[in-house]
Image 1 (cartoon, rainbow, N blue to C red):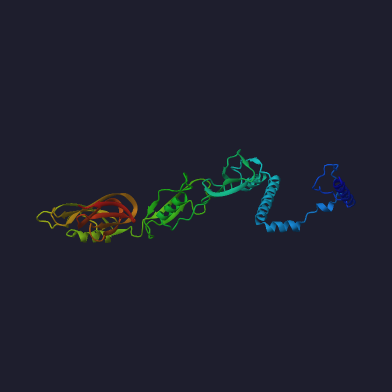
Image 2 (tube, rainbow, N blue to C red):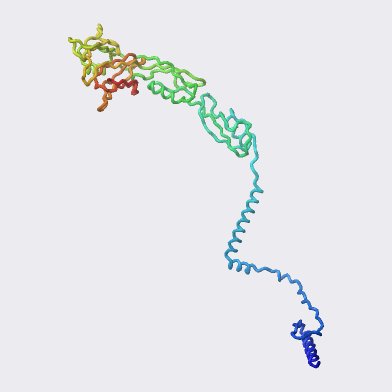
Length: 384
């Protein structure tokens, strides 16, 4: 009993000390059967202080620097948020163009069409083109989209504007070559169904100027064109359209006759037959009789030749024949030979008024004869 009383006194003294120091006593090991339970005291709450809510950016930045992945994710997130905000602001303030009705400007002057397009907030795209209607220069010929179409504002509208007619007056053709003028007008009005200038059939007269030279024209140079016009021309037949001495070709060989054809202004209509025993093969045996010493240039003269009989010779003999159109004046021509082996050569060069054409030849078998008229191939013939 004395020992229990001693323990009780020690416990009381310990509790007195703890109460004085405001310290909650820790449970004491040992027998405490008669000890009374004690209530747990609460700590007093501290008053709210706003300073305790402050955030240190320096500390936060140091933490981000210490963690590289967190820093990268933070930067990327900030960049994405900034782009999203910029797009939201852009699309909120920008609205699409309004739709407008395309006006009809076809047939109007280009400046009026431009003003009307501008009022509709449309932009014209210009294409220039020649027309075949005099006086429509500067007018709108076509448009795309068509009138009445609904398009967005600030769209482009294609306009085809007339540059006027290719020419608005008759040119000066006097002194020029007829073929060159014909080619020039053909090129000028290519693609047009109704050309503004049409050349009538020329009138040919003898003149000292070169053959084919235009001497006169009607209407004259500078005449205004208000509708398609026909131009009448007077053309020279050439300085050599006079008389020439009658030829005599009996006894001439094929090569001699070719030289006569090249240097004289006589058209030879040549026929042939197989040479008899009394005739020399490959020569002229007869010609048309002409009483006058001088005849007009390019007069036709009939000539008969005796040709060798067919043989096993490598050369072939004959008459090259072609039917040509009638030309208003003599046209330069040439007959060329293209052998199966070897180089080509010219048999004869001459001028001819057209119609029936006959030329004698002696060429290797398998040769191709080519006739050119004014440097254009007219016909070909292979000699077997």
